[in-house]
Amino acid sequence: MSEQNKKSTTDFGFREVPVEEKVKKVADVFHSVAGKYDLMNDLMSGGVHRLWKKITIEQSGARRGHTILDIAGGTGDLTMRFSRIVGPTGKVVLADINDSMLKVGRDRLMDRGVAGNVEFVQANAECLPFPDNTFDVITIAFGLRNVTDKDAAIRSMTRVLKPGGKVMVLEFSKTDNPALTKLYDFYSFNILPKMGQLIAGDSESYKYLAESIRMHPDQETLKSMMQDAGLVNCKYQNMTGGVVALHTGIKP
Ligand SMILES: C[S@@+](CC[C@H](N)C(=O)[O-])C[C@H]1O[C@@H](n2cnc3c(N)ncnc32)[C@H](O)[C@@H]1O
Image (tube, rainbow, N blue to C red; front, top):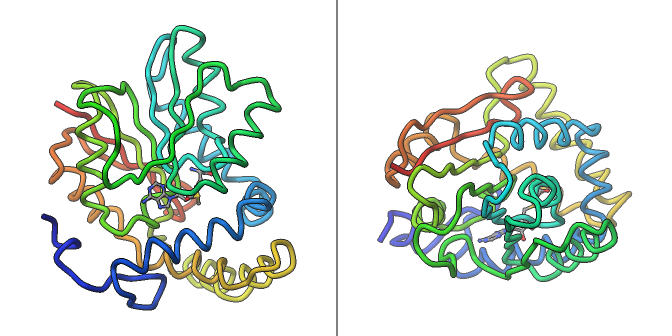
């Protein structure tokens, strides 16, 4: 049992809530934003999230015939790209805990004609419903910070990864430049919730987004968590001054 599991409360943004309440609160956030999720992503990041995701795909080593898990895959940005790479002999599993996000993802992929080799599964990253040693690559993009027991999720991903396979965690992280941090804080806490209200009719969910980013483990802590789960060659690459970091680890 991990440290997180032993605690009776956990963070939900800057608030401490009972562990069993966090899942429901996170679910409410994504039920609320699902319909406007893609539009908000483009607006909030000025389209830069596409570049972060492109770099993730390029560094994944994914190729034709591979089996890939995109956990917390949401509306399917990474899945869509992986689907094209692995081709008809491969498979991509888009898994997410939230049925509203999965539905938007499924409709979107169907509309674009890329769902042939994609399977949609409702699953919690903490206890993945797949056999050991199944996937060549596993990605979790902007998902891990929403998970209550992050250690359990990393262990679960490691279990279902094939030996030699790669786990990739793309997530908001800690900026290293004080001027950038000041600007980023102002943007996150003042502009973002207002944009959320204007576009998605929901400022609270975007307030949670800003707070959950600040509560997420920093680069070195997350790297240690991946090592503790048994992954090797763990490293990270900061993007946009550490606003986002891409962590990778290999299953020995
Ligand atoms: C910010 S979205 C990211 C979606 C997509 N990966 C992307 O990069 O655009 C976070 C996703 O994590 C999902 N999520 C939250 N907690 C989860 C959990 N414990 N297990 C699986 N998915 C989870 C949410 O439902 C949501 O779809």
